[in-house]
Image (cartoon, rainbow, N blue to C red):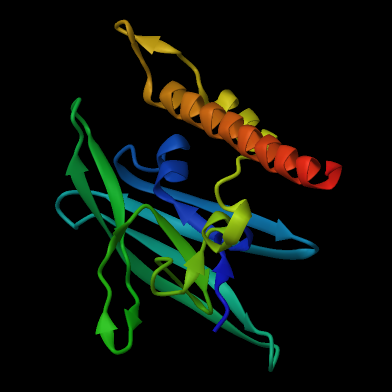
Length: 197
């Protein structure tokens, strides 16, 4: 079975929920709309972060079976769990509600992907990132857009005299890009040298 690409999949992420204030406590209601190449879809959700009732997110959407054009209303809860952070506060996670090969997953994940008519972790849905599917010679190379994206993510270069995590990542990517060019130049030199003789 071919792997579904994560970049082209509808997804719901904890980071996105936190960024938009849905994990600030109590009951929060919201939704997301996706559009890929003319295909539009949306999901509504209710986030409950309440110690008495337990932390969860209720997902509500309509699933269309593309073979029969039959629509089905989906409404189910996904459990949330939290782990303490090093500098106080806590980090939330989804607990994957799916089963694979008859065995409940229950994996703690930061992103849920649309898998058929359900949302679950990428392991249950056989979802992979494009970079994971690259093979052979191109796998180690870094592109200029990768560097530009990493540069935009860096808000602060140093904290207390030490490089920040995002800045260290940018430096690693720059080094890999440089090494890729050096490897390509050495291959070009070898090829050019062989043709010269």
